[in-house]
Length: 237
Image (cartoon, rainbow, N blue to C red):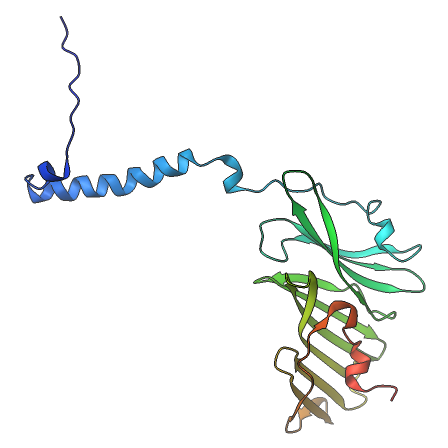
């Protein structure tokens, strides 16, 4: 009769009596096999969360100005929870806005909640550029004509308020044909530190003057309250 297989069990005490090279072999084997067995036992939902269905332009009509069309959109995780959120810019003849829709998923429902809206310049030189880096939403825009206003806004989701907080912005006024001097203002909204740089036309290029540092309020500014670039630059005052 064939012999039944023998179960071989090694305890900590018996392993101590093995030759050194066998102890090392066993340790390496366990370090490889144990993580593999644990990962195989994890449920599928632990690796990837169930995502809400992507919102179409028809779904977004109620969140846009009347007769507006989608100018740009970004379907990406904004707050780092593993869900794919939605950021979009919409434009009509009367208005241009940026909107943030944060995805949610629980045992009862999936969907999106609006958590921020910002008015944008109504004379853009192209579509806004949207990106997310380390849970910070970056919004870049260029507006105007031969005299242009360039802006870059940084927002981070504030879970305590359920809103998008402005954490910094850089705005510049300059001539696209080098016809006049330029002004750039960089503001850290968390600390209130602001740097203003004037640049003069020298020949065919801009030459910076020494920067001027100042302080503004560090009180939280949310997306709905974000100043237009023209306001930060003091245009029209």
